[in-house]
Image (cartoon, rainbow, N blue to C red):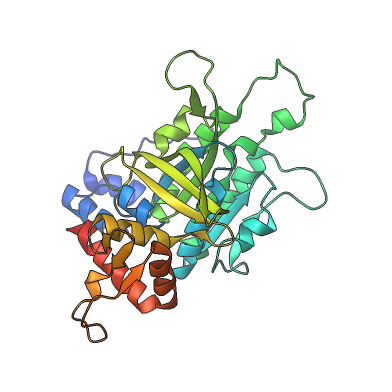
Length: 344
């Protein structure tokens, strides 16, 4: 006859620590550990709206209509992560990651991005399969500090739906599945300093209450998100009558790094990704770091430097753009000036 196991005595902090490890800390120690977390840059305009960028150990929700720049923005973040030697995991649940997506992000190292996709032969991966693979990868020591993109929630199909014929009576189980997975891995993401980016699409809100469109991921994923970025609208970006990209207007509903409700515009250039030069010029002009008078632009921040006794002047923003593109050193100086204003 087996003996009944005695209940664990948890009447002291020492006993709790023996049973569970170091799970109790002073508030000041917890604050110190949070301050050690680094941020990952997205782009100059988005960094400003996000109060600094993407925080390590955070859940980030990116929502919008189809073809509005969600995947491109995530691939730009992946490229920025590679610049910091961070691993990159890309869950291609849609199986629609095209050559132009990958090659259209300038500087992205395709050899170092780990793409999880459906098998070339065999059965289709279910939502459970994709999420299980993702969970395993974010737990791997080699992937600590990684950026992990799930593209997208909309294309995750639960096993029960894969095995059934299409039917109007089929009950959608994805929100519940995602809710369980997010809660299960909330501590893993923080512990391993993973930056999770979850792409969702808008669907029509049929309840008759609130917003006309809502993300299709369920309430729990939105609740878990430290940062929620919504694409409000897009506009064509044209120069000399040619469409060269699109302007993406963002609304930050909440941010892991501070105040929410900020709005900004990012510039996505075809074949390049987010155009940081364009964003820096726009920000520098708004902060009067670059002086604009009519069609003329003066780079006042260079006045009195070793190379320029007088600020160089250019007619038209395109000339400023071309100058900064040819002089990465001066672009970096301008970026530093903008960051100084933002941190003041």
